[in-house]
Length: 237
Image (spheres, rainbow, N blue to C red):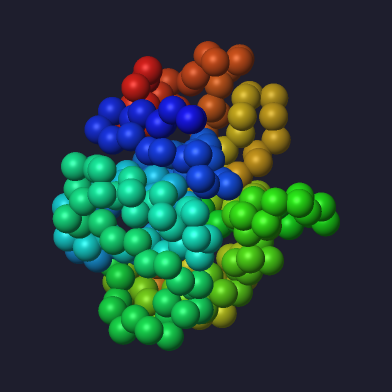
């Protein structure tokens, strides 16, 4: 049995989830702004539930809802919620994104998403892993469609995507009147290219606040910026 992944205030079991806890999710959960005191948060494609749990730790939101389509991941996410200190605030729905949009009439103050994005042409034999890793399971168009229907007028939408998809994704968001307000460019080490863009959108058009983050100077030698951003979560930070 795989050991749970332990954070400072909660643990996450992930043996039944195709998408394991990774740097992208922890960065997104640490970086996303909760300064607007969201009451109602939505986590699209929750996997283990890591983002929802991080939001529960960082905010006073009274309702944090997660959507997960994969059976095993949904069950595991629900268990992770149940075993957390915030189980009265966390709820996981077993549904596809489009089903959820059809059924829910609520508006969310914050929508957060670490989508599947291996859009390259290879597939594995494992269906859950494919669902979690390939963006044809959750196309960017569907995410934007959901945000258009579910985001409160003064809400924020926060996502992590490959840097190479950034321009297209921003153009797609612009079609529903969403604009990037903050972007974090992430590189693994000082010599690496930027691999990820973390983007926070709102319906307000303003100057983009862009910043850079380098994860490590060398293997397992983490930068101050990375430690400061994630230290409330990682045990060893």
